[in-house]
Image 1 (cartoon, one colour):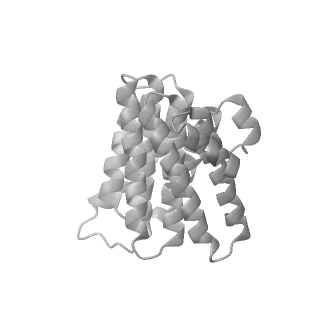
Image 2 (tube, helix red, strand yellow; image 1 turned 90 degrees about the horizontal axis):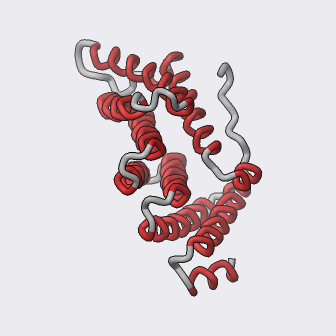
Length: 235
């Protein structure tokens, strides 16, 4: 950690030094998570925030860099999931802010690359990640809006296998949410719509497809060091 930090501080705009220090913070966070001690949650958050700051700086230097975009998106998503799992006062709002950061990153990459195919896919996945968060928070209107935005983007890539594999569960989720919103009377926030078989299968499938697409986009050396995502049962 000390060596990686010194190299980064000597040249904070250097991509290699930044990635090395960011990866060190991530490894430290994984170690802290495996220990699963109560005090470690604060340390994990500290490590994630440190990695996020590095990824933000590198992204600002070159917002059109695919791998820099991916690293920043991953940092936001890790942070959001940690806040959701921790569930301390204010954590849901922090998780929402992290997912919005993920979305803004994808939008900036889309603009920097003039709407490239990769950017369209990443922006579609970012909208679906935000939709899943709203779905988990039992906010069907917001989830439907984000899923619809995601679908409209992924439909532009008919020959992209990763996009089309993700599009199928998104379309299933849209139908489920539309059915919920058509029900007469106010929506009961306790309605277990996210646990219905079709909706839950769609959610799990979507999470897997996005994780798999992210893994496949990694350079070979990263794939060899990163565990391939496993599909949920039944897929």
